[in-house]
Length: 195
Ligand SMILES: [Zn+2]
Image (cartoon, rainbow, N blue to C red; front, top):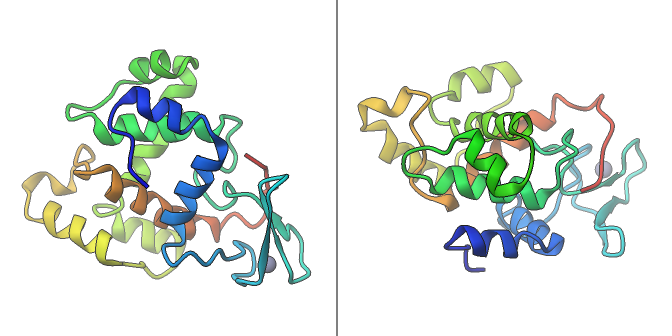
């Protein structure tokens, strides 16, 4: 799938919920095998009419949306706006302000601030690797994409600063998905919400 190249393309592309889901699935489960965020089983069935998966194992929250276990989970804001905001953050060379996100997405500046904050935190995985890893108490998962980002940023003196950003949208989203997977393991007590 081609990534949107302009903000206008991003807005149009992510206005389709199926595009949002397809995109996040491809980044969260690169092998295409969707796994239940609660039990980890891959015996899940997609229910297209509701855009959720049903885990075949019997347990609480056996029905889950793509939002479950991600930074989007407890947000009332739709994936269309989240993914467009992420596109903006990842594609703004000089950083994007919450005012700009607010105007572009037609949401309040307060909501935009929270979104940008979360997105930046997720994108800072390489410098927060120890903090995040020990905080969540889970091993860090590194794949080729992530390693490539780390190698690039680790040679830069600014790599450990919060402002250090990945150089591409592809890398950014891969990191976010990985960050989400770990954080989801601490969220078992939260109610699941659909996109
Ligand atoms: Zn399950």
